[in-house]
Length: 478
Image (cartoon, rainbow, N blue to C red):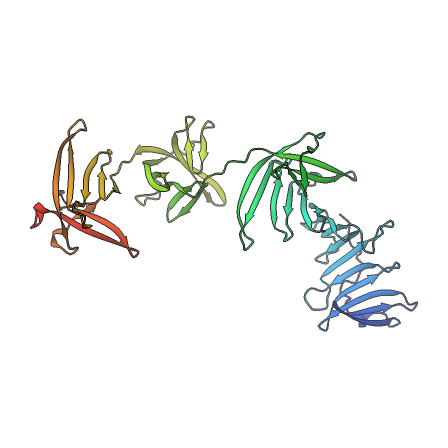
């Protein structure tokens, strides 16, 4: 990066009236505004000023070759300089524009950005001083396509001369892909592709490992190169080629794609519940505090069949001792910890406390069994926590109302010992027979604990509606 800008420059000089009265002037109206050309007594142009809407916004000094030497720009309309630019011209340079541009954005006398310019007027590199110490902290090289658009940005973040990030961009300057050196060893190792919606917002990304080819490797003749992409004979991208400049010479480095990195579960926290969602967007696990004491105590696993969710198991959670760490032979998927044999053994929750990332480990306790209710072919089946059918409620008359409940009684070996049939009679929701009853798993339970009827739950017009049925033997009371 260049050193200090000439401190003798009068940064604030933007008004032509302040200049030498021996000068002569010419005024030119252009699309850019009114341009004032200032000439010395020998007729040589020495300055240009650009006025827009009555305010002087730019001042340019002209060197002996007729080239812009310095450029002062007013960005806020107060006719005081805000940005100062100086230019270098190579003696062998065949273009009418500069070869290097130095920009001081805060008028502190040090260069903030140094830009290299090619024969076509394109910026080929930027060296950027991020902390104002006069030294480059970031180096960015630009690669252009045949239409003159930037197609690639090669970024060196640590000054080692090796790219840390290579971004492939489209004509709208959207990043299509990044090649990243994730471990800082000077070798790109990860390829990330991005997808966008119609509003230009990133909607997703896909990662693949990058494998650096040996230095002597060449691109196979069956492949083609499109920008930086290496395409096989089917038009599929199989790698990338990065072009950098080393010791004044262009050097190509070839990378091939490894297998696509597996997609991972995501964990979110909302309403006191941690939700583990798989890459397909399905909820596969939930962890929550069921008793409000501030400690997670319940873990629920879900499975899917034909797109329908069902609870596969439910376990108690207990916090692990503070010094416990996840064993190296275990794997973590989302929030779930799996043992060496693939069985889940616990849960890890990551939170931030005082700006620090903290992991809390919970171990799976005993499995919590619950009754389940399913509906199929017009029959409600109620199973207990042991998986055995307790009741079946059905409509045998086909009028859309339940009229029969079959109750199953089991012996000590778990075999059906007896079945009981109850005739169901529909009740109005305000019936006194429902007073002080409990309603659990499609059964109406009297205050003394006896099951005295059944109910169903439906959603009609967005509202939950219950229909109640009493055993006929209790139709006049119980």
